[in-house]
Structure formats: structure tokens, C-alpha cells
Length: 113
Length: 118
Image (tube, rainbow over all chains, first blue to last red; front, side, top):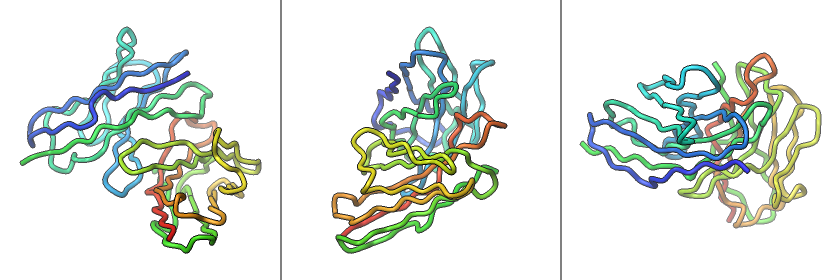
């Protein structure tokens, strides 16, 4: 069975500081990994995805994520957060010909001035 | 590109009535559309998967007769909550996946529909 764990329920970070959100997955085959961001009352926006190739993936809004197969992790990072990055972040896993995505419980990011 | 819209964005209805939510892919053809339900402060729960022109596949525990899904075209799927009750109040989000020309595994999400049943 596939599953995603986001160990941090809530993270508070100062504006301009770096941010790292953890994601660990369990998947029986080669995983396809995604990070989505959800602003209050909104749907999910795709930040980045990893299917294959370079394990360091660049996304939108200055985010990047690194796939580490040995650790079953796909952590999201941003060098310098902006107040507009305050949102809920979801990690998800799927696979080739596997239309179902399994989502983590999400991490709420609060940005303080 | 890859924009998905939902209508309405929010709806309030009386208990016992039916509510229809539309999901449209605006700039691509979606062979597969998904419907999720999200409770406050929780993750998304997949309710069903629909492919154009065929019956939807429902997840375990989701009542087919309660949540009617129609995927009549490659750009439109509808979710009808029949005989809605207060416990159906939730945030419903659809997503759409492009066809075989792109990686089908990428889902693009709509902005969601908040349903409140009184």
C-alpha cells in the first residue's frame, strides 16, 4: 500500500529565513512524487513533481525538492520565505499508470514578520 | 496552462435537496477527473475517479447513489450530492489529468466548492 507521512503538522518561520518541509513515502514501485500548496479556501496548486532523472527538482515560487530513494524522502525547501508562502503544503505519491494519488496530512506554514 | 475551474465556489442548501457541482478543464482535455473531499484541517480524501464516457469508480465507503458523478465530455465532470444532509457539508475539490500525450499521473486541481447543508 502507498502512503505519505509529513511529520511536521505546523511550522513557523520568519520571513526571509529558509524553510524545509519533510515528506516520507511508502510505495511498492518507482514513485512519482508531488508537492502541492493550498491557500486558505482554495484548491491545490502544483509546486513541483518528480518522475525520474535529476533528483533535485526545481519548482515554481522558488521551491525545490530533493528525491532520496535510500531515505524514501522528498523534502521541500525554499532558501528565503516570503509572507505569501504562508499556506498548507501537501506531499503526494503516485506511480506509472497509477492514477491514484496518496496525500500526506499536510504541513501548515506560518510566516512571521 | 492546465487550468481547472469549479462552479459554484460555494453553496448553501437545505437538508434534503440536491446540489450539483461542475468541474471543467479550461485549456486541456481531461481523460480522467477526480473528486475529493476535504474536511477542515485534514488532507484530501479521494471519493471517485471518472473517465469520459464511462461510469465512475468509487472509493470504498463512498455511496454511489449519494454522490452521482457524470463525465459527459473531455472537459466537464459533475458531482451531484443527492438528498444532502448536514454531514455532507464539506469542501469538495476536483482534479483533472491530461490524456496520454502527457504524464497522466499529474493532476491539476480546481479551486474547490464549499458546501454547507442546513
